[in-house]
Length: 299
Image (cartoon, rainbow, N blue to C red):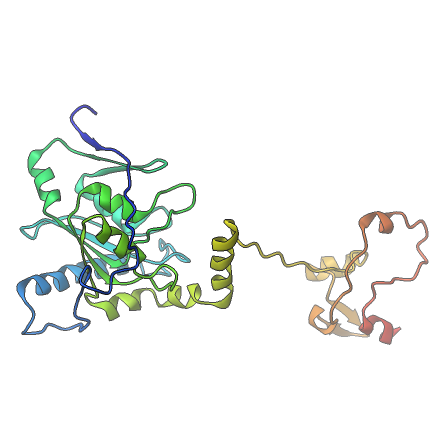
């Protein structure tokens, strides 16, 4: 489109990704109610953050039908300098809340190897964007979203939005404050901690999930080897018991003298030998060397 200005997909990585606790990133007040001592900007930030929280809840929360779980739910609101809401969005299985808020506002963002952002040719709209504030309930991540999409922090940087207000930081200790730090490093004004407790309540399930032992192991594995951690669970069954398979959907559960024994009563099966050795058996009267202790005791 010749009328649209296209930002080159170049991303400047800040050197101090995690340095957000000092003067660089402002910390908002964590109280959820109005405070008479709040200045006008803080009151406005709380009002707009409530709009972002409402957006996140509008789809049924993180476990809603259209929610992104096991990814975290997030709400986003893009607000002009005069208080007009330019766009709203909530994250779902198809994309991030910031993407949808930008799309509603009229900013076209295409996820190539890096983000390619295009604005309408309207000069007033461009001025609104250059003076706007983006409100998000959850800190945007600085990590790529697989091979498909670049990081959300890059999208925010390329859009030209000068100010970002964050409800709560990333609950993963490895990623916490890195998104805010990377945006601060490229010149975006970042405020964190507005209505923090309410924003944390939105992602309680995700917070518990991402801090489980298995998820921590998976992140460490990815960082060390550069590939996801795979988990394979195998079970060895008595494949000759066709009746038990038809009856139970598996061949673990068997009936002995009218008593039904589930696979949990059988203990641990031995590791099966190579299939070739089983197929090479010509006789049917060979001893079943994979019988469980329960089988032996009942014969």
